[in-house]
Length: 467
Image (cartoon, helix red, strand yellow):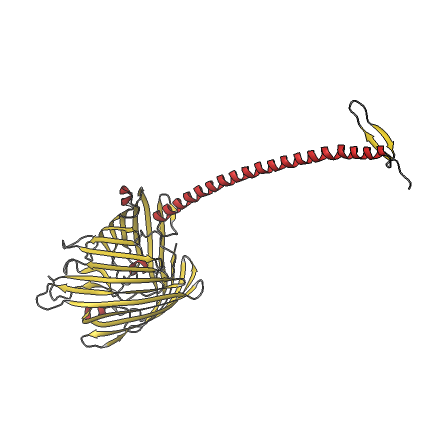
C-alpha cells in the first residue's frame, strides 16, 4: 500500500508554528493524529457549550422581560376599559336620547333629548315632525283627500349646572289641533336629575318641575311621528301636557313616575284646588319583557272655567256630561301595559278602565268606559317593516269618542257606545332620521242610543323626520 505523508502544523508554547511531514502509518503519525484531534475538538466543544448556555440564559431573560411587559400592558388595558365603561355609563345617564325609529319601543321616562342635537353655544336645538297625505271616508276628519303638515316641533335644552337642565318644546303644528298652524307651548320644565346621589344611590330619584306630559299609560312615550311605527294611534291614545311637579327614578328592574298636575285645560290658571294625581310603575324582569301599570284621577274640574280635562282621550278630551254650567266633573283611570321585545319586532298590549262622574243632581251621569289595544310589528328586511294595531273602546251608556270622525260632531253632539279601529301599515327606514310610512285604517262606530253605525276609514301616507 502506498502511504501519503501527513502534513500538520503544531504550535508549542513559546515557539512559532512549524509545518512538519509525518507518515500516517507510523506510530508517530498515529500519536500526532490523536493529539491533533484532542487539541481541536476539546476546546471547540467547550466553547460551543458555553455559547449555548449563554444564549439560553439570554433567551430566558428576554422571556421574563416580555412576560413582565405583557402583564403591565394587561393592567393598562384593564384600567382603560374600566375608564371607558365609566364614561359610557355617565354619557348614557346624562344623554338619555330618544332611540332612532324602530319597532321595539323602549319604555322609560327620560328627558326628551334627541341624538341629533345641534350645539348652539351652551344651548342645544333640534326638531322633528311629519308631513303627509290623508283621506278619510265622508264622516271622517279628512274627506277631501288633503296634504297636511301633521307635526312640527322644535326642542331647546340648556344645562343649568350639575345634573340640572332646562327643556322647552315649541309646537308649530299638531295633528290634534288641525284647525290652523298656531304656535303654542308644549313641554317646558326644569329637570334636576339624580337627586339620589346625595345619599349615594344613582338614578333612584329625579325631579321635574314645570309643564310636561301627563305620565299615564305608555303610548305617549312613542306617539310622535318619528317614534310611532304606524301613522295612527290607538283609539284610547292617552296623552296631554299639563303643569305640575313630577318625581321619577329607577330601582333595579323597577322604574316609577309620580306627578301632581293642575288637571284642567287652561295653560296658565287652575280653577279648582283639587289636583290631578298620576302614577306609573314599570317592571322589566327580563330584557325582552316589560310590564307596566298606571293610575290617575283628574281631580274635580269646573265646567265654566276649566272646561275640559287636559288629558286627551279617543281623539278628544274628557268633558262634562252634566246638564248645567255649574257642574263639576272628574274621571278616574287605570291601565295595564305589556311589551314583548322580539329580535326583529315587538308585541304589545294595553287595557284598562275610565270611570266618569259629576255632581249633576238632575241626571245620573256616572258611567264606566273600557278600552284595550293589541299591537305588533315585524322587520321584513333591515329597513322595511310591517305593523298592525287593533284597539277597541266600549262605553255602554255612551261617551264622547271622536276617533277618526268629525270632531265637531262626535265630540259635542253625538255620543258613541262602541268604537273599534284596525290599522295596518308598512314603513321604510330611509335613515335614522327619516321614516316613510303608509297605512290603511278600518274604523267602525255605533252611536248612542240609536246604535246607528258610522264608518270612519282612513288611508294615509307620511314622511316622519327629525334633525
